[in-house]
Structures are given as C-alpha cells and as structure tokens.
Image (cartoon, rainbow, N blue to C red):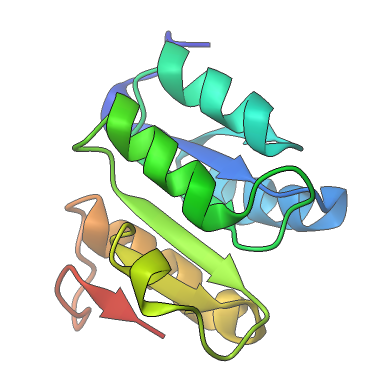
Length: 134
C-alpha cells in the first residue's frame, strides 16, 4: 500500500460503497493512487500506516463522524490535508476548524477535484488557494 508516492496517494473514507467507487474512478482518472476505507476505524488505520497526499472523509458515518476521524488523523499526521464531504448544507464550526476544506456532496462532481488539487499543491489554472469551502 505505501509503495505509491506520498504526493499522489489519496485516502477516501466513506461508509457508502457507491461514493467510494465514484471517488476512486474520478481520482484515478486524474492520476492519483486511491486507497479506500468503508469505515472510520479502517480509515484511521490506513492513515496511520501510509504516507498520504490527502484524505477525503464523509461527515456522516456510523461509528465515528467525520470530525472525530479528522481529529484523529490530524493527531497522527498533522500535516496531511483533509477534505470533509457532507450532504448537509452546514457543518458545525468546530468540525470545519479541523479540516483543510469542505465540499458539499451536492457539488462534489464539480468541486472535489479542484479543491483536492489545490490542497495537494497541484493548482490547475484558475483554481483558488488552500482553505476552500464549496
């Protein structure tokens, strides 16, 4: 798993397998290596074991929410950028302070890749800077 270059490996954490499949396809087409976790605990274990360019985490999951997952990953890997996804229009401010960016699932098809490339330091022309909210 950790054989991929750190700048190119993205970890996607979501309890919805169709979302993980979509994210994998989208990111692999862009040239990223993708690791997936279908649970919060599995995601934390992968983040602890692998060098990652970024983490994409869903806010609503059964055993731990995205804020709890992001907090634990930041404790383990303080410099790893984290993007939180949610179908909620608003997320509590304390949860947003832990992550580097937030993208609404309703806008993920158009916003996820530009936000990800921005926080990974691979800014496409016309993209915004780091702390992005969609």
